[in-house]
Amino acid sequence: MKTSLVKIPVVLVRQPIGDFYVGAMHYRDLIEISSSDMRRIESDLDRYVGIQRKLSPDRVHEINAFVKTIDATFPTSIVLSVEGSCAEYDEKTGLLHLGEGIDEDTGEAIAKEKIANILDGQHRIEGLKGLDTDRFDLPVSIFVNADMADQSYIFATVNLAQTKVNRSLVYDLLDYSRARSPQRSAHDVAVALDRSTKSPLKMMIKRLGTATRGRTGETLAQATVVGSLVPLISSKPLDDRDLLARGKKVKFVHSEYSKTPLRPMWVAEGDTDITKLFIAYFSAISEKWPRSWASRDPGDILSRTNGFRAFMRFFKNSYLHLRPEFEPGRALVSEQEFRKILDRTNLKEGDFNTVEFPPGTSGEKRLYDRLRASARI
Image (cartoon, rainbow, N blue to C red):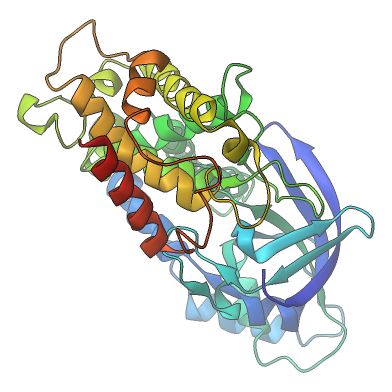
């Protein structure tokens, strides 16, 4: 994270969905670092529930007038989602530091006005713009590293408590956020990889919450893991989710096997087998390069975003090399089979560093290309 722009005294809240932070922010700070990302959420959900959460000018005008009154108050929390690279929690001081970070998917900088996405409270924040006072703090609930499935669920849960929102619509939305889909399955696989005692990725994936200063075990954002898994399952994940949410069936087309090799497993609801497959794959990686995998030094990348994303791309090549045709009953691959492919590569302990493979997509591609070339697949 770049220089901290906002420091917020917070309380760490632990709930079944994961950890989040509750604190208070001055309204000017909140306006400066936040933007409503409902358009992105809507584009993913509109197709099923027709949700409409666009700003209402009348509502904003009403709030703008209200906040100027002598007894104005907003006692309920603004709900925010923040990228992990934009947040650092200091256990000693109880402060959550928010600042500009890097988008782990694109490698691009996250501007200060994009640090926090508003999941609930956009009308209140818009209504506060133009206010001129030093006496208006807002309670905030901050979720860090929430992927799309988490954000959809949080959004639905928050709106369930709001009596002015049509409850039938919100119940549909809540069911939709829980519905089976490529995104939901990838989310569940990521959680399983982080929790399983057999997984080399155990306690390495940041769910909701952010890495604490001085703790270096969590090297991957859950959104990064999910984003790498979904393309192996579906080339049209929104269409798949829409079909399933409408009670229809999804299909596996043999001609698309090379594009989405894990789709047969997913269509058969074999999420557990997909998890086993990645436990075997990353076990082979961690056994092949144990020191590099275990290293948490800043310059080492094998167990960080670039290394993970490159090896997830290489997984597809490896899997199709071992299973060039779909054969029911032979979808799983053993750690030993993956290891034979990895042993053909020319990468050694210590090669996985930012000098050889610089941060961003260029370093990821360089590592992927080298894996393919040296393994000859």
